[in-house]
Amino acid sequence: MQSTVARPLSAGFTLRSQQRPPARLSRVRRCPVPPSRTCSSVVTNRAAVETHPTYPPGTAGRETDKNGLERVPLREEGWQYWKWTCGGEEHNVHYIQEGDEGSPVVLVHGFGAHAYHWRYTIPALAKKHRVYSICLLGYGWSDKPPMQYSGEVWAKQVADFCREVVGAEEEVTLVGNSIGCIACMSAGALLPNLKGLCLLNSAGNLDVEEEVAINLEVLDRIAEAAAERTAMDKLKTAWGRLITQGIFLATKFRIKYFLDKVYLNRDFVDAELVKSIFNPACDPAAPAAFFELSQAGSRTEFTIRGVMKQLSAPMLVLHGTQDPWMAMERAEKFPRIYPQAVVVPIEAGHCPQDDNPQEVNAQLLRFLESL
Image (cartoon, rainbow, N blue to C red):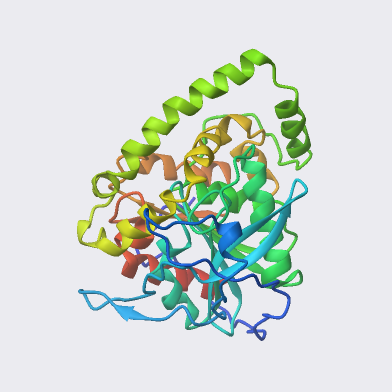
C-alpha cells in the first residue's frame, strides 16, 4: 500500500473543477467592534461592542512584511463580530472575513492565539475562497466569560458559526492549528456538509483507544455539576485560580520568549504578533477565563478517535517537523486511525501557518482545489 506520508507540495491530490457560490453576508448578525485595547485603557468586549461601529467583511486590509510576504495588518480593535448564544448566555464572537467568491474555509487558531494568527493565510486563500478566521470563546477579541469551557463548547461554537454566518447549506472546509484542530474535528462531526479538514500540528491524545463520540448533552451535565459544587470543590477552585493566575501573569509578560521557543523562523515573531497576543491578555476578564480554559481538557468527554469515527471527509495533516511539543511521529498516526488522512511535513515549529506561510498556503490551496 502506498505511503500516506507525502513530500511537501507532492501530496498527489486529484483535481477537479470547483463551483463558486456567491458570498453570503446577509445572515450575519452584526455587533459593533471594541476600541483599541491597552493595559492602561482596556474594556470588556461586551461593553465595547455596544458603542463602536464594526468593519464590513472584506476590509481586513493588506500589507507586505519585511520579507515581501502579503498579510493582514494588525487592527487592534478587531474586525467583525457575531452574537452567539450558548448555555442561555449571549456572547460576542470575533472573526475576520475576506474573499467574496469560492467555497468557504473556516480557520481556527490554537491555545492562547486568535483569528489574526492566520494573518498570512487569509489573503492567500481569499483570492479563490471565502475565508473566515474565528476567535474561539475565551480567546483573542472574543468575549472571555468565566464559564465551564470544554471541547464541546468550541465544537458547538464552530458548528453554529458555520450554520449561522457561513451558511447552513454551504459545504465548508475547516482548518485548525493545535487545539483548533480538536475544535475542527469535533465541529465537523456535527456538520452534515463538511467538505474537508486540514490539521496543522494537531493537539489531542491519539493514544486513547476508547471511541467516544461528541454529544452536546455534555454541556448540560457540566453546568449542573458546576451548580452542585461542594465547599471543598470551591476551595480547590480558588486554589487553582491562584496558581493559574501566577502562570498567566508570568506568560503574559514573556510572550516573545515563549513564541521564540515554538517558532523555527523567529523573524516571524515580530512586534505585531506579540502585541496581538498581549493586548487581549489585558482584558480584565482574561485571568479568570484563563483558569477555566486550563480546565477544558478535563471536562471534555469525547475522544479524538471517537469524533474521527463520525467523519468521512478528506483530511490533510500538515505538521511542523521542528515542533518542540509534538513530534512528527504523532502526525504519522493519523492515517492509521483515519485512512483518508494524508500527512505532509512542513519545515516549521508548532504554528506552521505563521512560521512557514509560503509552504502552508501552497499546500492548503492545492488541497482545496482537490475537493
